[in-house]
Length: 115
Length: 115
DNA sequence: CTGTTACTAAAGCACTCACTTGATCAAGCG
DNA sequence: CGCTTGATCAAGTGAGTGCTTTAGTAACAG
Image (tube, rainbow over all chains, first blue to last red; front, side):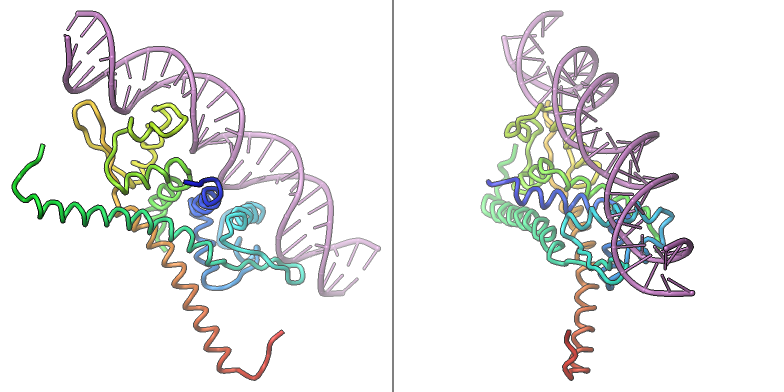
């Protein structure tokens, strides 16, 4: 069980997704690029605050920032979303396999040995 | 855009998943139930520390705790995992639909406008 | 009853987080 | 050149995390 590499990545990913403002930013960027100012507009928050959220998202790999004139357009990096998806599906798969085995076992030993 | 209800749930969910110990606990519970003591054993951490992680997981809905003699066996609640999965897939779907539209647009105007 | 096991409650501590304001910077406009 | 716009840097604050240790509780064993 090697840790620390995927672990840090998943830490950053799920931490990034744990804030409603950041989730909203991700959702909006899934519809197309946007500048920091555009992203900041809907919120009752300073642009600096939004800028800090963007840095958290960038460190997690969920978004990347380019440069165009005096703006820094942000775009979604869906590969990072896949990593989170993969982790969750792994647990779900293990769980449902176990459920299948339990069902099989129950239909095998259908007499009533429980305690 | 109604917020605050799903938002709080997703906050708790992704916050719960943002810690490596808690992700490990979820992964281990996907293979079957376990008591707090059993869960705590592999970690260089007090059982109280693990107990607090379990409370975070329980508040997020990811696990539930029963009572059996003097133990509190924990079990995974996969429905909560589905909620996180659903949110991520929503963003991914929006993004890929947008990519499809871009491709369509590019094959429409397929003259040779590349930078 | 006493003692042990499995666990939760509570308090404290270092650290991080989500903001804020104020300063700075870089690019374009007059 | 100065002025505005878009954005980051830096410092500070209040709230929350991730642990710890110390107590306390519930269930069983002697």
